[in-house]
Image (cartoon, rainbow, N blue to C red; front, side):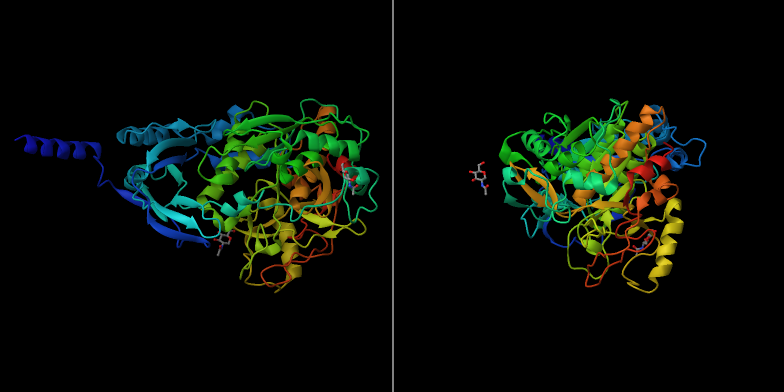
Length: 569
Ligand SMILES: *[C@@H]1O[C@H](CO)[C@@H](O)[C@H](O)[C@H]1NC(C)=O
Ligand SMILES: *[C@@H]1O[C@H](CO)[C@@H](O)[C@H](O)[C@H]1NC(C)=O
């Protein structure tokens, strides 16, 4: 009797706990194979905890994108009329029926979700592998990265209930794999080498030549960047930091003492943290990338209030979730920074299309608020974020996203030429934005059949602009040395934009916000067009820099005086 009762009771419980075991699941996303470098070690243990996040369909993302273009296009009547937090949310918050459908599904399954974004379009919840397999008809397995031994629990496909179709954009992390090499090195856009040839004391005098040691003075001279201090306290420049790259105050002080003797050596950055981020100051914890990014903003954007944003590792998917979290964090601020520079990224083919799309739309939202978003384009020429073997060209993310500004690298000062590692090419995910149509077709016409079949002619081309990125002098763990990379170029270009914004604010004008519609129109002639050098990779010579826009150095490097005129000052 007892036994029967128990059996019945558990059967009962089973039926009730999983009322939708045979629910109508529809395949939502899949990838064809395990990404290169990973091995599938079979099903993950059912009790493995999983923290999943889901993206709810935004009510009118096309409307937001139109609004972004409207406030960012110089000829538009609404140019510079950036949106408020509430105005952005009105476009991107999910519709009530979406919220209702998702809420019903969550409660049906006994899940409690936390809101992860200011508009409520991202939710997160805690589950286990066996529960997630059931919820999403998935097969969460353990994958090992061959080179690093790191493991990740992922599924090659997942489904969603029919009732959530049209309401749910994606579940993460599922088919997008982590990027373990990025977290082993300071960044995938790491300075390629760091050498400490001399002590600061011997380097403290002016450098012999800007061709072999790029100091702030070299950059100021080449681009005509003023040394006069900025005056506007509301105009902020933000530098993102990920993967335990910490910005060291003592290194910054030594750098300023050496290279900006006109500035108080106490000039520094403020700190914001999220996802458990921190910024410890012991010398051994200083990071090359973070030191470079803070030194070449504070050392160039004279007296522009600069904030280092340290994103911690309180999530499951390395830099990608950090990328999303930092934007949602800034979107939640009533006054986000006017410029954000990021020297991290990865190959586009490592990210699912829908995740790439969602991140790209997050940049559109922050751009609509008036933030100029700049990213380093990558250091592998046409082969991706880092030099790698390849048969077809590898675009980088987020450079393929049309709602941010991608910065490539140059070298030498006379003449300034393309750096051979400067990543550039064409996205496989994002089509050509209208602001780029003419520039891109002019380039492709000149290119003819070169590299035909190696890249997607319909994709958004990158980078948009460039700046110096070879033999750039920084102070790292107390020593002076040089670094290479588009990592150098993004903070340099961001500093120029911040100084322009300072003067715009002082003149009572709006800041520049999303830059590309300006850069590809009135801004183009205010840039130094780089017309030689190339970015080889994948056993080809890559693309060659040429007059006009090209996928090596974009439209060119800044000319501050001309830019002032172009922005109407
Ligand atoms: C470097 O600096 C250290 C201490 O500051 C000093 O002992 C050493 O002699 C210096 N080396 C060179 C090559 O100048
Ligand atoms: C080429 O790029 C477009 C975006 O413009 C994309 O829709 C298409 O899928 C890409 N083709 C390939 C083969 O990746």
